[in-house]
Length: 269
Image (tube, rainbow, N blue to C red):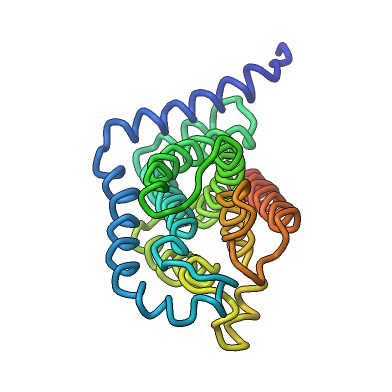
């Protein structure tokens, strides 16, 4: 048999699966509401309720006076990415039930193409929705320049790939959406809450601070926070890992999740 080219076995399958994820999202408007509106409502309600309490400890927590809605803004972007990754990777379970996934696995394509197509599709949707939320930045007093926008975009892509690949890794061996939601409630939401998105590590107890330090999403949120304030000369908050360190950990986490997903697909497809 003739040897198939890289374009046939990898590039085209990746593009096809990526396009399928985007088209499916456009046709399912409820996913937009769930992934974008829910974090915004959470941000407004919780932020409005805690903003006065947060101001009392703002100087200690962030190194300067900061409104809670402003503090929680980068974390809410991370939440949007997380919700999008959750909704998008549920489609893996649905595709297996419908027989589509088995057809893709049986096709003469590289297994890594399945991972890349699904992950890139999910990450694209996550980044677009997070950027829509980013348009609200001027309303909260968050400074936004061309430079900071570009930095936020780059960090969002990295975080979105990492979380989408993590969602893929969790969803791949499952055959129940209920089981996936259970894992989401047990692992993914606490992962977000203990990332510095909801409260700073400086205000947490010692054991929570240790969990936050080893949580990879902590570094993604820290990178987002510093990217937002890239040209502001401050405001990102004290006691954060450096931007270089946060970016390195986030890239490493994304690469690791994609590699593990590819390995799982190749061994258990």
